Length: 246
Image (cartoon, rainbow, N blue to C red):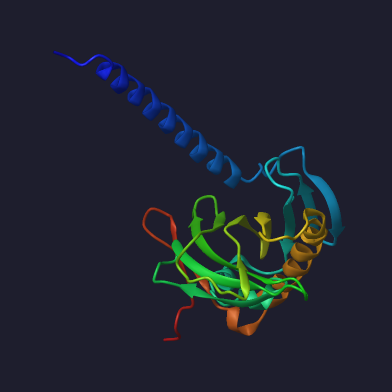
């Protein structure tokens, strides 16, 4: 004889399981939405500063007290030199404002790799560190190159003297224009800890403005000259190399 209620219990278990699955899907969808950067051509961008060939915009981020910024610039440097800087895992210290430590993590390859970096914060604010997943794509036909960076958990043990940032999303787009490079840079970072949003937002102009000026200068250094972009037979960028003299 079937026990009364046994079928009902299984039915409720199925319903509860379905609800849990639905909640998990909603949470995952929300996490994905949080990671998305605004469209480059959105009308919500507000111009904050313009200097020479550099323009800095900001926008509120619905799910965060920290704004997202967009920088547009025309660098007086060829795209080969700019990319030689960008793929150097230690170059963050050369051009990104307040980057005090940077190096590659794990093996990876040109198109998919990881890096570790540290942001030096003014006392008494604790330094922030990141483990970044970096994906680089380039198309020979369009000549555009994109780099996407996302902060991730793991890959490197946390340091008790630093606050690990686990939410940071960056998009770089590079487009050659004659012997110069058009650069578009979008970034949203939640620095964790007790930093107020208004304080971080005041840095959203200084960081990209100063960093882009330095990137242009560093790209002109001798050690970044003579590089070329290497594409595979399908026209996809697979490396930035410096041919050896023969």
